Length: 474
Image 1 (tube, rainbow, N blue to C red):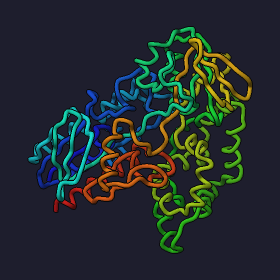
Image 2: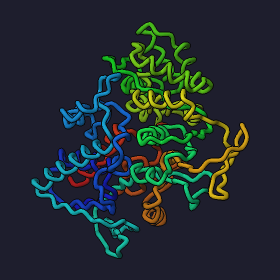
Image 3: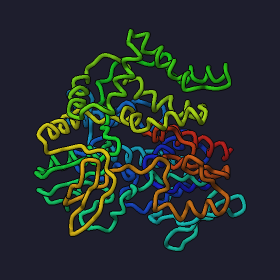
Image 4: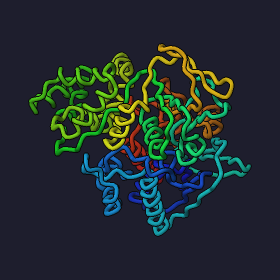
């Protein structure tokens, strides 16, 4: 069995970790990755220490269903990064990248001891075609490579330039790594940050850590900041679970959004919490003044109520499964609340929320909604919105790539797979294999969940792909 893995980020690490555990008949694994930062992907490469993993360790394990795997590796390293509000370590993303690299190298060592041959090819794959029952791959250096199984682990898409600013001086199209891009930002300049999600928070917090003295404005269509993580509590959902959703599906042949709301309502009722009050608090985030809302969120870090905690947990554990069972009209209803859902499911950490609050209170940071147009002119940027026209020295694009978008670097390979009939584009985005020897792991996987894949979701996809590959070997 010759396995080709295109990409060497978190998805590839999850795939290798499961293969090392279950693949007992040796073969060949070839990993294609041009980046010098193997196993880290775009999010977890070397960067500033202010760029934190925004998630507690329990849901950051790359080993599927082993929720203590990452925490065990972190061990005493986490003591230096303990967040007092959460009672959990919140480490720089570069340190999490070390965990991914360690997991990959450990898996490769196990595979090698089992007789597997492993190669790392530092070239981008630009084409793939079926050669009989196998794959014929072509890399950018013109070389050919053969494989029986092909796994695409190419990561997420590239940030979109919504306002056509690419090429303009002082426009940062992709902020990561912040250690490189923020070096080019004058310390007293006025900065507009497009977006108000976690990437925008990273930009603002890192600017503050570097002593930036100029004004910073978040330009957001929604005007919604991420929620703030609450301290974990010892509660496991009893109603909103994969098992209960599966039982509903088996009993009724369908699962509706009303069913899921009913399970959440039952979860809260068991703890004596009011469902309508919980929903009203969530919806208020779209209209509440940002400073007031952040203060309230920070004061609720130790709130014992389970509502948001249950949503955050089940969005990544139950959500992907439930999403596949919902009707398209129900999916449409959820999509209308996408920004709110991502705000709840992917919160910011309290230490960053405290910095954002301080900057908002001081007036150095502002949040503006209703932006219609941004123009680069005369060495500056003019922003046109509902509150008139404003001028900025620097614009940083902190808009996340759309879910299941095709990364620019993977474009030629995806085009070749589509032309060959080996894959199809999913109507909602992403790539769907049309060949049983092709596997797509990570955000590019078509038909993925409403919420973009978390590490836990990527680990689950990787494990499933590994089991399929090993089954083919038998």
